[in-house]
Amino acid sequence: MKCYVLAGGLSSRMGADKWSLEIGGKSFADRVISAAGSAFDEVIVVTKQGRGTFSVPVIHEANVEVAAPIIGLDCALDHAAGEACWVLGIDYPLVTADVLCYLRERFESSGAEIAVPEIASKLHMLCAGYRATTAASVKAKIASGRLALKGLVDAHKALVIPEDELVGRFGRAVLMNVNTPEDLEEARRRHAETQAG
Image (cartoon, rainbow, N blue to C red; front, side):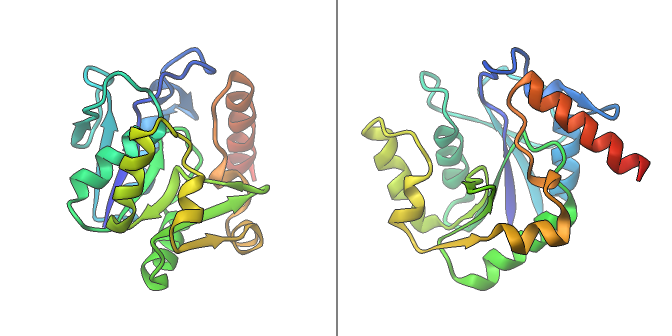
């Protein structure tokens, strides 16, 4: 199974390209790609043309006018060419290979069209598995201007992996979504605590 790392966002809340930000001396891109590389057969970055340099193959979003995660998902599903795939946002810098291996196994064994973890009542649609059967819904949402990903769960057979199943095994920080300078400060603190502990 391929893992597509989405790195095409504008990072407007952060004020800097998230892929290049560092925690513990390693960039978000290096951290996410390394974790995904240990859990999936191939890692591919999805981004806009001319955005960043990465250590793995890169594909570019065809839609240059809209900046939304669903555009990256659409690109990933097209590239996967009918195969199930995993999508992972660049803004999960504390994600680990262990949690990704676990999520992949749960997805592959479930038969669900979408597998998505839930932490603090939030569905992490950018750390989720998608089967090819979701592609038409994704394209329809884009065509109608409905760019939120959450509605896909209601439209497809979904496996929601609950918080209590994940946090006890892997801790809460592994699925921390980092979008603002305050989030970055918190992620760096959590990483430092993990290294010290």
